[in-house]
Every structure is written in C-alpha cells, then in structure tokens.
Length: 257
Image (cartoon, rainbow, N blue to C red; front, side, top):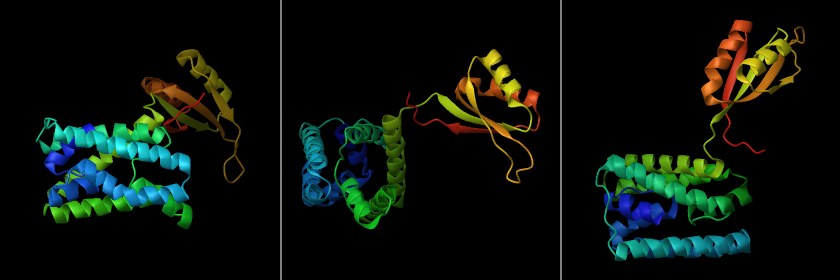
C-alpha cells in the first residue's frame, strides 16, 4: 500500500479510498507527511474500534495502521522515485498496489483503518451494509479531491483507482478462478446428455430433479463445474442434443474443496 501511494498516487494527486485518500488530500493542503496524517486521522477511529469491534481486530488494525504509516513516511523521507507521471499508468498501478496490500490486510482479519472501521461500526449499529458505507465514504473522498485540487478530471482518475483497488482486493481474497458454474435445463432426458458430456469432455456433474413453474412438465437441471476453455465444447454438445436447451454460465469466484 505504502509503495502504491508514494510511487504512483500521491505525486499525481490521485486519491485512493478511505483514510489513505484523505491523507493524500490533506498533504497537499498542509504539507504534513502522508504517513503522519494517516496516524492522526486514524487515532480517534482506533479508540472507537477497541470499544466496539473487539480487542483482537483492534490490535491487528493498529499494527496495520502504524506499519502503513511507517513505510509511507520512510518512502517519503528517502524520496522514493516517482515511477510515472502518466495519469493512466499511475492510476492503474497505484490502484493495483493498494488493492493487493488491502487484500492481504483483510485476509489477515484486520483493516487499514478509516472507512473500514466506520463501516463496521455503522453496520453493527444501524444494520446498513458495510459495502454501502464504504462506497459512500469513497465517494466523499472523490468529491473532496475535486474541490481541493479544483479538477474534476483528477476526481475521475481517483474513481478509477478506487475501482481497480476493489477488484484487486476481491482477487486476493477469493483468488482468480479458472472455472465456471454451468446450469443446463431441458425437458429431454438429461441422463443421456450427462453421459455425452462425461465421455467427450471428461467432467462429471449433478442432475437436479425439477419441474416447470406450472408443474405440468418435468425439467431437470445439470449442475457442472467446468474450466473456461471447455465452455464452447460443452455448448456444442448440449445444443446438438437439444436445440431448445437452456444454459446459464456463472463465475465461480471461490471454490472450496
């Protein structure tokens, strides 16, 4: 996270979400180091997290906040070279770096402070989705960027950075699956189709017994987990067997054996 902030985002006045984004904005206004600002912004939130979210979560979060602040301050102090002043490259690579860092933090059962702490507190008290609160806070940071830097363009780049960060967090938390979930529905006998799929592709699935909503016609469903590169072959087999067949293909974002 510290690398992404100091090498890409902060020098180009592009904000990320949460307190890191606020620190980038306030740094331009006060010239206080970003690392120091992260600690100052998070101090009251740390106190709240100890009281409302449990000591273990608070301890891990405090460790993350001070580690992030330390390395950010270190990179600033020793003048880590700015790797790009090209806005597109800085936005994407800064977002990727921050996203990977946050992904590992969340995977370790902690947070980097700021928005995540507030989101957890509000979701516990008011039953609002954590993701909704985080989104509201991130939008507030983006608006602040537009006002502070007097640039709608920088605010839009910040939105792309936040979006990139969220995608990398998901990738770290759930992995990048090479598989798809497929549901195949037909009024024909799916036992025959199952054997064709097993013989020609070498995969197995599950047949779920079902009916149409009007309960007049039987319509079973095959449930399959399949590699992406075999989807087209599966489609050919299925539609050759029944040209009125229905197929639903979905992402298998996380698979646990």
